[in-house]
Image 1 (cartoon, helix red, strand yellow):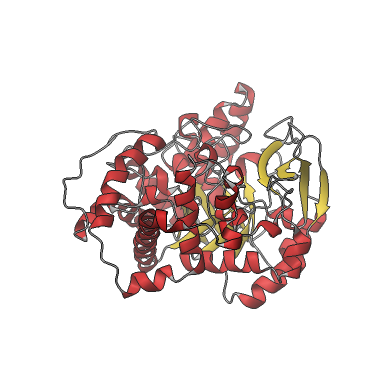
Image 2 (cartoon, one colour):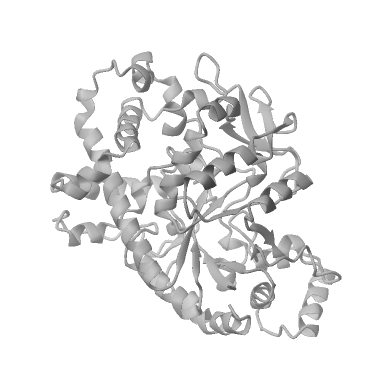
Length: 481
C-alpha cells in the first residue's frame, strides 16, 4: 500500500520550553499529519544525547533523554506544584545546556512528589533501567567524564559490583523515575498517533558511542584495549560529504564475540526498540555487510580497511527471535553489490534521495516499489537549499523539466515534493523543512562536522505548516498515497 510520511525530529517541534517534547505540540503535529494524509511520522533517535548533542552518539540504546519529557503533563499528574514559566518560547534554535538547566528544577520537584506504583515497579525490573541509572549517577559524580576515565572502583562496578553505590541511591532513584516518565509519555503519544492511523518510524544507529551504557556493560562486544579505549573506530572513507571521510569515533564491534553469544546484544537492543516504534530504520546498513575499520591512531577516515560482517547470521537470528519486527534500512552511498543482495534477501526497504538522484535527462534511477523515497534527510540540505546551490543554468533546466511534466507549483519545493510523491516507491517521506519551503536555514546536520548549529533547528510554531497543508494534502491524494 502506497503511503506518505513526514520527517521531523521530536526536538524540532514547537515548544514553550525551548525544545520539542512529548506534550501538546506533538499531539497537534499528529493531527496535522492526519489532515495532510500522512501515514508515517519518522523521527530521529530520542536516546540520551551525548557528544555534540548528536542523537547518533547516545549514552544508551535503551534509555530516553529526559529533555523530551513534557512538564505540563507532569503538572497534570499533580507532580509539579509550582508555576511552570515558559523558556525560549519563540526560539528557532535549541540551546541544549540552558534547556536542561531550566527543566531540571521542575523534574526534581516532580520526583519528590512521585509515589511508585505497580506500573513503575514493573518498568524498573527491566535489566537496563537500574544499570543506566547507576551509569548516569557515576557520570555526574565524575564530572560527566567518559566511563573509561573514572576511578577503577567506579569503572569496574558493572563487572564486580564491589563499589558501595548506596551513596548515590537518591540520584539512582531519580534517574529511574526520569526513564519511567519518558516511557509513559512516549507510549501515550505513540498510542495517540496509532489511533490516527499514523505509524512511528524510529531510527536505530548501527553503532553506539564509547561513552554509553551499551559499551560499559558489554565491553567484550567491542574492540577495546586493556585501558577500555577503542583500538579501532567506525566511519566511512572519503565520499560525497567529505574529502577525508567521516571519522565517527564509535568503537567497532567484536563480531566474533557477538556471534559466540548468539547475537544477544543486538537481539535485546532491537527487541526493546520494537516496543517503542512501529517501524525501525537502521542507519548505515552497509556495515552489516562490510564496515570501514579505522585504526584509532588515524586522525582522519582516509586510512582504514573494509571488513566483512556476519549480516546474514545476525538477521536470520533477529527475524527468528523477534516476531513481526518491521525493519527498513539506510543503504545510501557507494555500495558493493553484496550490500543490496543482503538487503533484498530479507526484503528490507532501502532508501533513495531525490536530490542525489535527480537527473532531468534520466529520472529512472533504480525505481523500485520496495523502497522509501525522500526529497532529503536530516543529513542533506533542504530541497530548496540544494536547488539554490545549483548553477543558474541547472536551475533553469530543472524548472523547464518540471513545467514539461506538469509540475507547476509556484514554489520549487512543492514541485520536488509532488515529484517525490509520484514515484513508484511504496513509501515517500518528506522532511517538514521541505513542506514549509525552507532554504538552508532549516538544515539539521552537516555530516563530518560537530557542534552548533547541528541538531539545533526547531519550529517556532505551526503557522508555516498550516499555510502549506492544503498543497500537501492535494499532492498526497493525487499520488494515491
